[in-house]
Image (cartoon, rainbow over all chains, first blue to last red):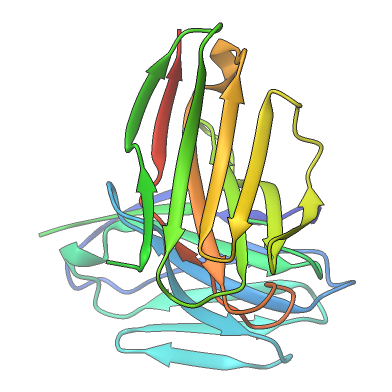
Length: 110
Length: 115
């Protein structure tokens, strides 16, 4: 089981602000890094899966980067909207299943 | 709608009861998972099934008993649970085991309360 750290634990921003979160994980035995978004009363939904050092993925206003050598990934949200309010989970794969962090809880207010 | 359906959505049971959680996926995936979400803890992997065979048991107490009759259905049988087992139980499926790039598709979870 991998030790996954996500920061900050929670974040409150105004609509239109840009924000970013961090996911740290052991750089050894790395296979892939997943990001999920979990809205209240819904199921977690995959955002990105990254495998290569230097990978950068983008979906609309949300993007993520990966550094496998130092063991971290950043998730960026540009121009946050209230519908971005959710818990964002990162999950590195150790080879058999995903190991989830506690997540960053984002609240975007109008 | 993720293609993964869990029932029941809410369950209240006593410590001496026997109940089951059910998960069904309509995505044609061959791997299925049970995760547990307790308050202020990360999602914890409980069991993994790949092509109906259990491939992971993450040191889960025997009062939780999984069953996977086929690649589309997964059950979690519960008996003599403890109040600390109260949690959200999430089922997920993937096209291949998640060691590669197979993203997980989750159900909405079964909220269990043990009295």
